[in-house]
Length: 120
Image 1 (tube, rainbow, N blue to C red):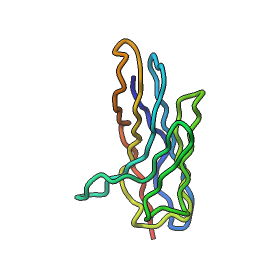
Image 2 (cartoon, one colour):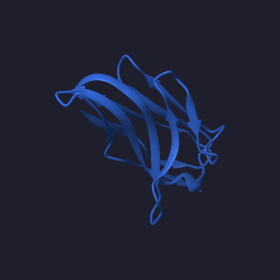
Image 3 (tube, helix red, strand yellow):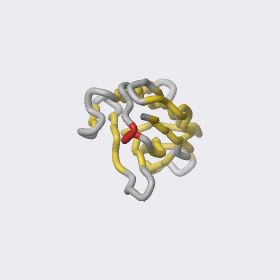
Image 4 (cartoon, one colour):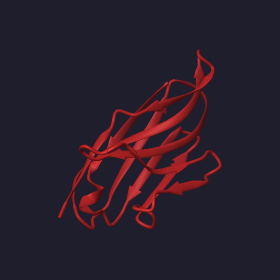
């Protein structure tokens, strides 16, 4: 299996942007999906996660501004980012735990990362 992220780019502060990520391969099921971000010289931090039952968790820094959602039929996860701030600038990575063939084990996968830059 693999994850492919799309979206991102350059946007002005207070504007919105959305990210998407699709899991592909011979997928049996997808567990929790999430978005992380990593700013220059910083560690990679969780932005938001969503379980297969729709339960969500957000970091305090994005709560109320970002919304994570998933489409279980298409194995995708999205991140709607509103009221963006310059401090949201980072490379965003999608993450998912996927049960796929031929391994038939629940493995963790990362997308390739997409740059989000918010100008003031």
